[in-house]
Length: 113
Length: 114
Image (cartoon, rainbow over all chains, first blue to last red; front, side, top):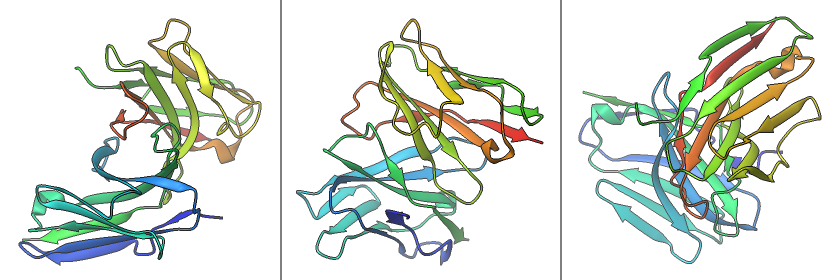
């Protein structure tokens, strides 16, 4: 049973437009959420996180939104750049810790020049 | 380099054999994690070390899997009697603070069990 779901395996966006990646979770105990980016043949790299006490966190072109009632979070990238093309993983954990992360299956983002 | 180093990058073995995968974390990082990523899936937690001790090994799938970190730095993931279902990319990550998401992942060791 997948506790963290990324239902879109792929997404294509034009350069300069907004990319919106979505993630749903089922475990109401999750209180800390993260996004990771992964290029081919590299390990995932941390992008941005959000605690369940917030509903938005922004870092430059990246913003994560959390809707606890819907158990849904999204990552917005504005403006999208070709270098953003990668697999994006949503992850969640309990007790506000990164000690044990539960990952989604990832969304391949392609930003077209 | 200064990143997390994993060896070997690729390992092909036969069913039933024993395998060791090594992780060299970033110097000074006290937290070390092993994850496993199967094709088309996200990483799956295996074990977390804080210093030399395994603080959480609840993700190890069965007793064929074991990991050590004897001096609080390098870690070895050991898999006995490998099975075809063990084929995956094994990712190691390290960090300074287990309460943030700032995990630094290595490139992974791709294990193929024939």
